[in-house]
Image 1: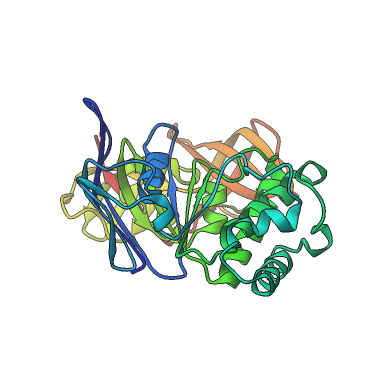
Image 2: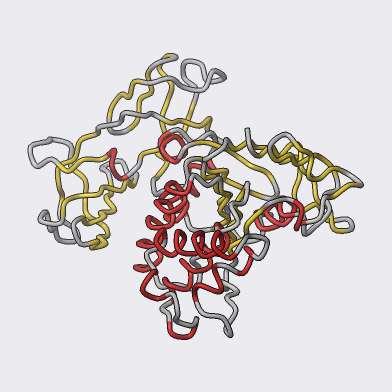
Length: 346
């Protein structure tokens, strides 16, 4: 493992901001700390960078201890690159000089070769002599990324790197950044509150709440196999429908009987709440099971319908937009649930 964060604790006076947090990241992997504002994710990034001292725990990079209680290796000795929210480009330097800023230890020829390599990597070779104010927001972000990667850091840290960009650019640049990091073979940690960014970039994601990681997993597993209600609610969209455990492999809900593996503490007759995602509820005109359209959100290729069931429950369904139904209309639905997730009823 390149990065090991073990039982991390950070206190400011009587307030504990990070509490017993642990995760590992392999060489070449992209990790993400994802959570709401105030959950402690940026504090974790600062502790990894060496900007703050930890209260308890240990941080190791490539097997070397960076931080433990009473001992913190300075940031400049950690071989860590940083990409900040505001890009922090030098306005008096052009693009190639910004990228080469941290390469003064190299011979001129080696420095020029590395700068040219990074310009090509981020597709800005033609903008080498431009200044920051002459670039778009997306171009500035790519310059900041190239500058951080140029010295070949062991680890790259990115703090809300796309928050200043509009939504369309943010989504496109997220994919570009992942491609750049993978081509460079970089190991990176991203901090964000935007799950679309996290899913677009990261191999592994830690969902944070109140200084804890609730689940560290792949984007696929976070969406389809959340370990608790907080993760289920924070990642993606969905609703919880009441159900009853029939046996260890079957649960009955209003829409029928689902087959899966359920909480061991739930025996026959145990009340549970079952998570249904919009892609679990399929529109089918031939189905005898009907639901009433209560709300619709047009999303281009799809419409997200909010549907009321005969028993009063509500589900979401993502339907191709050529099925344009009116509010109040009843439509046929059926379930395709590959991952049944149920939580004991509170």
